[in-house]
Amino acid sequence: MRLRAVWPWLIGGAGAAALAIGVGELAAALLNAPSIVASIGELIISLQPPGAKDLMVALFGDADKLALEVGVLLGGLLVGALLGLAARRDMRLATLGFGVFGIVAYLVVARDPLFEPLPAAITVVLAATSGALALPYLLPGQPRRTAAATEVAPTLGRRPLLLSGAALGAGALLTGVGRSLTAQVPAVAAPPITIPPASETLPPPAAGASLDVPELTPIIVPNEDFYRIDTRLSIPRLTADDWTVRVHGMVDRELTLSYAQLAQMPLIERYVTIACVSNEVGGYLVGNAKWTGVRLAEVLQAAGVQAGATQIVGRSFDGWTAGFPTAHLAGAGADALIALKMNDEVLPASHGFPLRLIVPGLYGYVSAAKWLSEIELNRLEDYDAYWVPLGWAKEAPILTQSRIDVPRNGSRLSPGAVVVAGVAWAPTRGIGAVEVQADDGPWTPAQLSQPLSTAAWVQWQASVDLGAGSHTLRVRATDGSGALQEERRTPPAPDGARGWHAVQVSVG
Image (tube, rainbow, N blue to C red; front, top):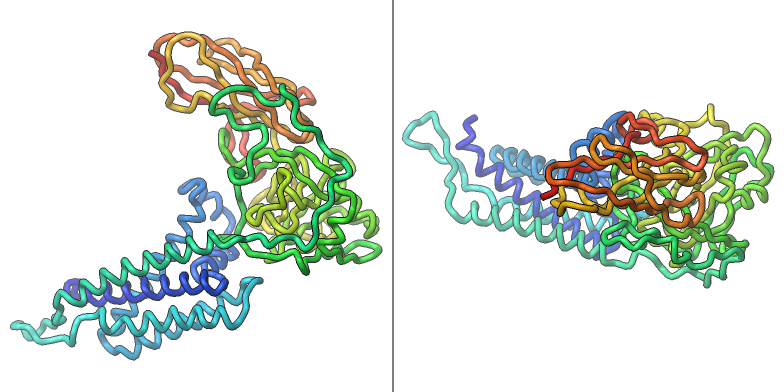
């Protein structure tokens, strides 16, 4: 089969698929139904083998989710192209293929916890029907014999080719509009009650808590700038009206607490820096915020933790789990929270509304369950949470790390005194010192901001003299226990990246 003879059918099928995908995404946004593209992507995430996340992050960095969605879209176009090829033999095969696409899409969407049958059915029917109806108009006419009797060529005019191009463009436009509408729909409904003031409040940060250095990461990261890492490709639109958290497992009394009940319990405010285990040395998957919520220990005390319960597992509404040792609450994690607020605002949807766990000192993948619906007590040896079977460590305290924010890597500077500044963190241990080195010279002690808490990061700044030429600037931190940050570079897997951050600058 020569490509010259079949490529018009491939392009026509891809155009029909693009139109189907675009109509499906727009319909999902308008009907508040789960996105077909996102649902397929989330299915792929749930089936990922060990090491897949590392590979995606290595290849695409923070754009790994975008890359997955693009891959799903390209896969859809490929399926459409094959259906176009099938139509070359029999249009009924291609029509049946779009019907199968609709059935499969419905089954995949039905996995989403927010699935509702009618909106989902309308979405997939519109998608499949639009693709099936458009296909005949995008394909060339019936094959005709050429001068060489052994060759068959399509009667391809400009019209099908132009229509196929238009369908591809329309599909891309509709997909983009659907995604945009989904992102603009308010994802947080107002809580059913007014959240009372916290019983333990924090004063505003003191003047010395923040250093006045341009382009330095703020000591408290605004909600809209805070990093987001989770396994979902779409932000769930949830309501707190009937939201509950079930506490069960190895407890004396199983509890089911509503959002309103938790909000009426004594609330406390804490500054806590949280970090993603995938954060590379010098990366930005880390942030500090003021969190308001109920002490997790208080809820567990009401349930009565049984002897032998060595693990606390937080479970999201979609089944994602994170587990950490119960003993952590007796020490560094005593102020672990079921959080309702972030930086004095109702918890944003992208960060876990209605409720999430914030556990000082532990990487998020073992502790920070968003959209919290269950807390289970069990034994560490009996249960592995989501990421552990995929090769990540079962226990994961946040490592001591520091980062240079100013100057940026590759900056061109003037000779003389250069301000070097950044942030350093060792949640629950605090930061005792930060030092900066230029090339292979001596280490220069940095000035630290006044700590907000031992669970929060600090800003730092130092001044170094640089002459003309290329220079390497390095930073290292010492935590509150006196332990120096590890120099040897390691990848994030399985328990966090190690190494001193360095940037290259040019002076002259």
